[in-house]
Length: 111
Image 1 (cartoon, rainbow, N blue to C red):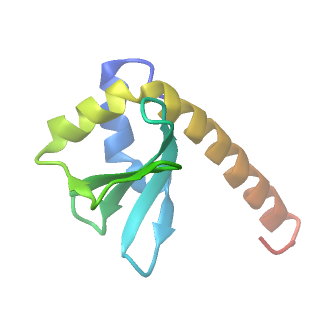
Image 2 (image 1 turned 90 degrees about the vertical axis):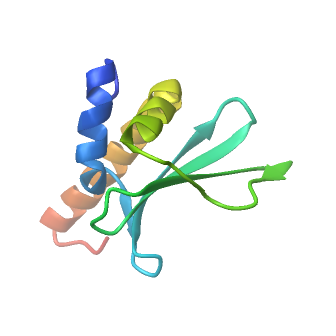
């Protein structure tokens, strides 16, 4: 699910659980993409069934002290819009990974 228009951001947020990985231990869905400003990576997270999103940045020369929780949906939407290019690259790669895993499942191969 690519972000091409601002309205696409709402679709991403509404469907985040279907386009992200699941962390059973942390009880959250997450997606990692490039932090092009600081030269590292962002991890965007959504907790359980709630609509609570957070982000954490890490790179070779930095690591955010803790997760930044977004105050509201507009804040996370703005963050995604500003980082849409890096997000789109990550989702394109992720879609390829899921496609390979699905094909392997159909062929009866372990994931």
